[in-house]
Amino acid sequence: MRSKIFKSVLAASLAGVMVLSMAACGKNGDNQSAGSADVTNAEAGDSVEITNVSYDPTRELYVQYNDAFATYYKEEKGIDVTIHQSHGGSGGQARSVVEGADADVVTLALAHDITFIEQAGLIDAGWIDEFPEESSPYTSTIVFLVRKGNEKGIKDWDDLIKDGVEIINPDPKSSGGACWNFLAAWEYASRQNNGDEAKTKEFMTKLYDNVTVMDTGARGATTTFVENGQGDVLIAWENEAINTLAEYPDDYEIVTPSVSILAQPSVAIVDENAKKDGVADVAKDYLDYLYSDDAQRIIGENGYRPYNEDILAEFSDKFDLDVNLVTIDDFGGWDAAYTDFFSDGAIFDQIYTY
Image (cartoon, rainbow, N blue to C red; front, side, top):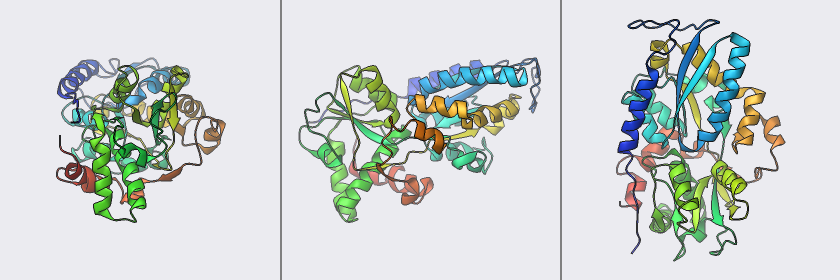
């Protein structure tokens, strides 16, 4: 009988809300006194704090990026910026913002999670067009991470449904990366079965029957596979696999499946909070700078695919740029895909029972 381990997100979410609430106290202290609101313009000499609520695997990326942005902003604007950071499963992070986490910007795994915050009235409509490339300054895809030697001979999605293969994969109900994983696998199975939904569901049921540990977020799944030594294969963000291989070159291999998906993490200003905190201009500059050449190179160095094609080409030795990638548009966009696959009673619930 398969064994599943589920890690509760509740305690982490509550702790994250508490940390962010405390971090928000005293933001933009030089311009905003207690009880004031809608102060949006920081000036030279100010000391400003903003909070970025992000998803699991971006921790290292934003440590490096935040330092670069703070240096740039001090030099260009004369403003000292401190960036507070929070990480977790993308869906859980979106819910924490709706429930009160004082995020000024969000950098989440998929557009649907930001739309969820928009629907709560915290983000202005039209956010997806506020920054280039549908507010997606970097992309990734989904690959397999296996142990050195690839003992189970895993080469493509159909190898994951074989008896005896133990899969580590996060939970689509809390992890944005897990949603991308599911859709990539679904597309492969659908093609193999000529679009027959019943057969595709059967394939997906077999695949998830082999999932032995389902963490709440992508980084938790990486920890389970790499540090805890569980499973034969991790279905992973490409950047997580690349960074793991860089750290443990003798222990792991990356397998790129024949079909994967263009994963497009999204960014947005949490307009209601940023205006309240008096940091709307800084929040916009913070996300704008992600598209600068310096930031795009930081993105590539951290295993994400820069949106700038010229800079992406500089990292061609790091990425498989020939992989067959479907997009979320092939599923009708995120609103349709979430309704069809991940809402209560939808396809994921039909093929998987907790």
